[in-house]
Image 1 (cartoon, chains in turn brown, green):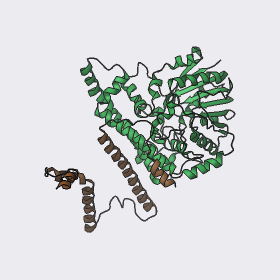
Image 2: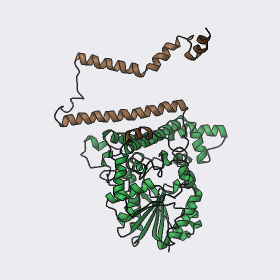
Image 3: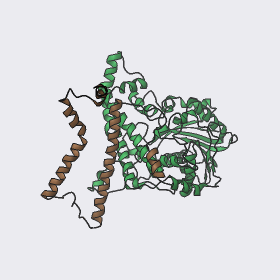
Image 4: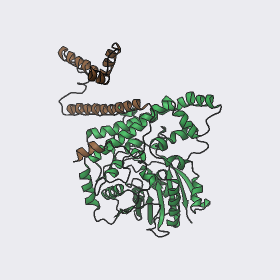
Amino acid sequence: MSFEAALNEAGAKPAGKRPYFLEPQVERALAITMAVAQELAVARQRVDTLERLLVAKGVLSEGEVAHYQPDPVASAERQMWNQEYIARILRIVQQENEAAVLPDEASSGELVDELAVN
Amino acid sequence: MTAVRKNHPAAGYDGPPDYRVIGRHGVFPQTDHDEVERINYLAQMNRHLAARVVPGVKAAYAARVEPAFEAKNGRAIATRHEARKAMLEDPAFQTWSALRRMTMEQRQQAGRWTVIRQREELNAKAKELTEADPRLELDKSVKIPRYVSAIDHHCMPGSYHTEYCEGDITNGANYDHAGFVTTSGLLGKYSDGGGRAVAQWVKKNLPDFKPGKILDIGGTVGHSGLPLAEAFPDAELTIVDLGAPVLRYGLARAKTMGVDNVRFVQASAEDLSRYPDASFDWVQTTMFLHELSSSAMRNIFAETRRLVKPGGIVLHVEQPQYTPDMSYFEQAMRDWDAFYNAEPFWSRMHEMDLDGAMEEAGFERDWLVHGGVFGVVDRDLFPDAQEDETEDFGRKAAWHVIGALVP
């Protein structure tokens, strides 16, 4: 099936060892970020397409989205969505900050031997 | 760009055309909304890197890289390789390089996704168009040489030759439909701006030349070859290439574009003994030599000498050679593709004495010709390379011509 093939093969490695310009960890994270940036652009264009189609079909009028004024309930819901979203994507920052004040914590790996013995 | 009213927002737009203006022949992959926008985004990313990031790389070279090299070595940078290695230590070059490499990788993934998801349909179409057509001559015994097999040129997984199933055109369709990303549309509607430029150059400089048989070596899907067949409809064009997927796709593409005076032949151009001496009036390569090796280039040059008829021409079109008046910065930036975009022969090829190589192959010095061409595109829809001041080292649709007029 082509969908399975596309999943497996679209991102295949080309022949030849890949050059790295930054620390590998940094370059890996940047590569993932740039792919996400690409998909954000694609999603933004899709929303724009929807708006223009809705305007063309008379469902929306020109500028209605740009000048949309949410009522107080909608406004609060949207702001809460922003808060939730940011908290989700910055989870690692929250967890590293929580860890910063817990210097004596053991890792699971460190507990393996301890719990096996005690 | 299409003429737009002054004060209209589009009047101030300067950038790649919307991918939707691309020409769609009969085996062109279907692209849905998001696939189109992915290509648009990636073309804009390349444009951004060339227009807005490269100037910073250049400034950092003068402000940091050169002074640091001089402080360390007590002398100025003296080769392009020293320039490149010194830049590898600088964050501006590192970041630009990482982003440029990633954009190429994303482009390959985007194009492959589009093609692989519809591979069965595309292969069926190609089969219907090419089956039993004598103008497609495939040869399973052709060996893929190391200069193609060791590294996939421009990070294109599977290169031009890998087949994923019987009658496969995946890698031809991927190469064709998303190449737009790399040139930001500078090669025009059918990615044929290079070939159209060559046809125009020949008609202008050799107005009495009437070729009967034309050979395009390493012609892949026919981007640069078909314009020659179209410009000289009485001629018969032969495109040779190592890769079956690009050749199958090429014939299907040509037929649906209404170009019938062309055949696609799988062969190594290092050994074209299937054709007798003096078989062709015109032997052409376009953006091909940099994907070879030194020995392959020698062999191919020798074959071009053997195959060209008296009164015929041999032409090669490539990005400019490195010359003493080209700065080490520019040479190093142009060398980027050799080291970081899987085009390893690019570096050596661009420093070679091409006139000398032609002479070694048996062409006499006073037969040699040189020129320059820009991509020829439909200017209502596509940007004109001649008017574009953005330098995207090695990617711009501005090439050198070197050739021989054989008496």
